[in-house]
Each structure stands twice: as C-alpha cells, then as structure tokens.
Length: 471
Image 1 (cartoon, rainbow, N blue to C red):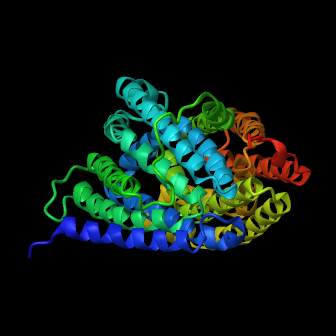
Image 2 (image 1 turned 90 degrees about the vertical axis):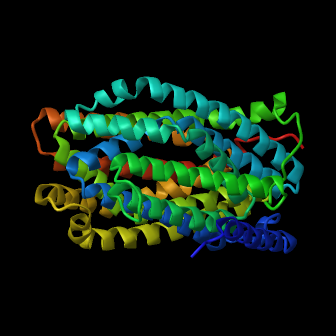
Image 3 (image 1 turned 135 degrees about the vertical axis):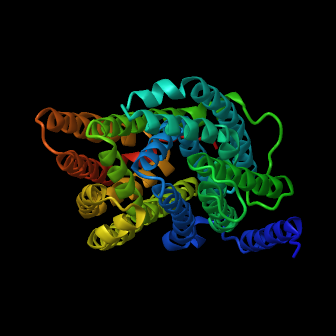
C-alpha cells in the first residue's frame, strides 16, 4: 500500500488554515472581550499534554534500557533547556507585545514584532548549537554521572541541540499565534507532529517498524525530526498567509521596537537563566545521591507532567488576556481575567496533584522496574503533588504579569524562592547526611514562598503599569 504523505500533509494544513481563517473572520482573534480563559486554555492544555505524552513515551522507551539511560536523557534535557533560556525570554517579550498590538487593533505591528523576534531567536539558536557542540562533555561532566551515563547523555545532547534553529522557528510562530488569541492552530499542528514523534520514538529507540535500534540516539533524532516537520508546516502557513499573524515587511528591527522587546525580554532572560541555574544546582545535589536518585527525580517529574501542562495552558490564557485587555485600555478586564485563570488553575492542578500522588507507585512502575527507583519517585510525587496549588500560582499569576509586560517581579520572586531558599536548604540537607527524600522536601518551602510573593504582587496592581507603549 502506497501512502501519499505530501497529499495528506497538504490537506491537513488546508483544514487548519480554513479553521484559522474562520476564527479570524468571526473576530475571535482581534477582540479580547470575545475571548475566554477556558477558550484559550483548553487548546494549550491539550497541546502541552501532547508534548508531555511524548516525554512520557520517551522515558518509557529509554526506561527499557535501564536507569543509566533514564539518567542520561534527563540530564541531557536539562542541559538543552538551560540553553533555551534566551529563547524563552524573547517569547515573553513576543507574547506581551503581540497581545498588546492585537488588543489595540494593530495587526501590522504584531507582524513586525514576530518578524523581529524570529530573527533574534534564529541568531540565538545558532550560537546555542555551537556552544553545546563544543562544551557538552564539560557541562554534563559536572553532574558526576557514571561513565556510561555520561557518554549516553553527551550523545543525546549533541544530537538534540542540532535541531535548535528549527525548534526556535516553531516556538516563535506558535507563541505569536497564541498571543493573537488563536490557540487551536498550534494544537492541530502539534497533533500531527507529535504522532510522528511517538512513531519515531518507538521505532528508533527500540528498533521497531523496520527502523534500526539506536537507543537514546533514536530518542534525540525523533524529537529533532518532529521539530523540523512542525517548523516546515508553520512556516508554509505563515508565508501563504494562513495564520492570524501577517508576515510583516523589511525593517522590523527598528530601534524603538527592539528597545521594547529587549526591555521585556531581558528580565525574562535573567529569570530563565536563574531558574535553569537553580534547577541545575538542585539537580546536581540530587545527583550526589547516585544514578537511582537521578532516575527517580526524572520519573517523578514526568509523572506530574500532566498537572504541569494544565498550569502552562492557563498561563498562556492569562498572559494573552491581560496583554490584550491592557492593549484595549481595559485594566479591570485584565485583572478579572487573571483572577479567573488563577482560580481555575489552582483547582485543576490541586485535584490532579492528589490523583497523581495516589497512583504514583503504579505510574512509576510503568516507567521502570526497579524497586529502589520507584520508592524514591513515589516520595517525590507525593511531596510535589500536595504543592500543586502553590505551583498553580506560579503558572497563572506569573503568566498574567508577564503578559502585561512585567517580567522583573517574576525574576525577583524566582531568585528568592529557588536560589536563596530551595538550593541552600537542599545543600544543608545533603551536608547533614540526610536521605534524598529530604532533598525533595525542600520544594515545599520554595513554592510556598513564591506563591505568597506572587499574590502580593498581583494584588498591588502595579504590574499593569509597567509597559508603556507609544500610541
């Protein structure tokens, strides 16, 4: 049986474009009053769930190779995301400026912001790839993994980072679509590409469907190929004017636009670096307890990914709505939408955290058949599971204030909670000779403090007045 993949892809993109154009004609993209928290959140939640599901399949696939492979992939992923911090920072600026422009009924400015953001992110991605090609061995070496785990992690990281430029393209254009109020088009594209990712994961990691057995190298290739396909689809739709955001014109990197983008992005970039530095420091302390502790941490994080994806979906909704309402000169609407998003996020993540904790042993056993790793993962899931309402504040309130252009307060709050509280406490626990489960318990202090500080910042309403745009 011969399958015409080109025809399938063309028809798939045509269906997406028809739905996107229909939404634009109905005015669902341009007017914040026609948007709702749930209407924006659910496609993003499903999109994130798909992404998380691929992560679960990846852990399951490499889990069959043993704890060393799980530790290697987890370490490589964390190194990769550290170097995406600048990209995530530019996304914060892109979201705020695109949402404001759309809310202010200025689609041409939104297009210029996206064009400028794409140029910056491509430059960053090329430098990222070069840095990791040259320094992966030294960076991964600081975690003290055993020789085989380190070798596997270096292989995984150097292959994955090769696809950073195409990852940047899909990230920018998907972020811009969501900021414009269209969260469904990125979802439809993600469905298509994540199915391909899962197919390739199962095939390349374990040698099925006629593919070679490549182990964790196959996991890296599967992710990279799916990134590439996603970018090809979204670029094709963008250049053929099938997206809510226009392609823009030359001269997008004007002095004033770059100043606005950088003024929002640099605190977000510092926050991303601080966050990734803090997470790596915490991960390094966990790694001092051995490969099984690292594997348990990675598995526990993936078990709770379902709850995290819900939070990220509401964060996107909150940032889009606050940006668009403020762009439309409606601060009351911005505050109320953020409050509603926060309430829904806390309820959703709180319930999911408890459910995942209750079934944590079954879920951890699904990933790996190692009693010691499973026991540690269960403790991790219970600790972080009960803290989900406080993590919800990070997603929802953090997303709301970033959507308004306030990226400095999340930076300060992350610095306090993660760097000044969690990491020092974890190091003290390690020096006292306590078990890794006590290291996991330091998460409680971190998320509690950050949640309280975000509530104080949100209630002050000062975050609404941070970004000043020329009319």
